[in-house]
Image (tube, rainbow, N blue to C red; front, side, top):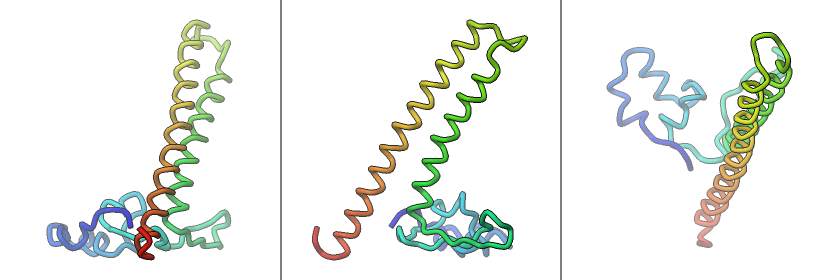
Amino acid sequence: TIGNNRSLAYGATYCGENKAIFADPQRTPESLLLTFHHLPWDYLLPAEHGPSADVKEQRLLLPSILAAYARGVDQTSDYVGTWAALEGLPGVDALRHAAVKERLLVGAADAGNFSASAIRFFTAAVRLATSIERGAA
């Protein structure tokens, strides 16, 4: 399992609609889900619109976490490409462009390393949790 269980302990401190939203994992915004709820790795996230507005996709928690790390790496690569496209444009001198490009490349490499570490961590955590549940650890 992963996350914090704040829905019951802190629930009384929230007003009206927020109290109802944060008490129910199916209604809690995905970006806050693990802040308020302690959930199993195979928790089924609420359906969201897929590629087509008519299609709803349900996703498991762990693959969604891992996909978020992959999206972060992709986004940093996009930043590098976007900045590269600005080379030679007025207002961006060559020295400044090269310095920013170098920082973006370092950031993209760091994002890749961080993502790989996080994926290894979560994969190991799930393996450990599964073996504990089965009584093997």
